Image (cartoon, rainbow, N blue to C red):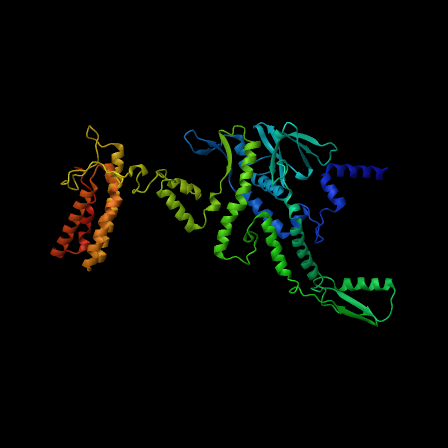
Length: 532
């Protein structure tokens, strides 16, 4: 009676599992040409598969994943007040962190082609917890109304639990019907099987003391029992990595013959390396990401890392974002889920510094935004933005005005001190005019310092000094043009007066014999334009 009860329990347990898996066990459909069985679980025994699954799963799990709110004027902000943000970014259920849950779901996706979680309502609303459901026990059907029905077989239940489409969070791999994804480990099982076979062969070879095999010959006929006992005794004495050097004593008339095998001739290392690359191709992971550095250099590894983000990781991230929008986000007009890959795309310190500098000069990022991305706290007045001075609206350039359109010119006889910013009807400068005046004076101070240093370097070479001053005059016209227009200055007259004053000061220094370094203060003081 106990035996019958045990048989019934075994049958119930088999029925509770996936029928597809049971069918595979019976028919041996998972056996590859190399003779190695490959299934989603067994494929993890292959080091290349384990490495690819780890690098993709851990990368997806480690990236920041947030729920964002669209702002009315454009832009976005993290919806910290939304319960779904707490679930996805920090803790999806009572026993798993966000990292652990996303790592598990991504690994299922890479091994089984599908990943499922039960959307459990609770105190935080319609989505209170996300409970992982093993893909081997799930059956998905598409109903006549176009909706999906999920049947999940619990380990200790004979009847599957039915879930509607609204109750399941579903990630799917490449699919032929849009309902369930292909199983990646089945699509490339021969590549995985050969990779695993080379690992097993290497292990067996060194497990037998780096010997291909042994033949014991006898001069006289022996009983089968005697031969079998001799074989077992030989194996017990000489099989294993630490047994190869032991001394053998054989009965009279028996001789040992070693089989020869050359792994170099068999190209074992090349085969193992190629199969690792084949697994990487299947998962679209650069070989350098799993430690295969044979054909890699520093520059190629850096490029492969960027390719990994662009071509390997981004598709999986988009798959996650789309599934969350479909299954978890209710108001998708206002909210959306997105990964932040900026940290992976930043590059090394030099590249990151160049990037932040350019973004800051363009006014895209403020100092505090840069500090936030580097994990630093904000500073006072760090939210202000700066832009390059020499910018002009594209529409300002016309056939009639190819220079970009200047403001009405000031009287040609106006001096530098008399060229002041535009004012309102009441005589007070506007806010935009004051800002333009600040930019004008800052740029002028910079150009004044460049001019003085250029003269110091070329003071003993008159011909070069003259050519350089002419070039610097054109540079000043270019860099001061936009700010001069905004302040109502005639840039041509201004530069002419400035150049005339520079030449007079240069001549005074030459005539009086005063060192040029002592004239620096008065030279630079000219850039502090009079406010009178």
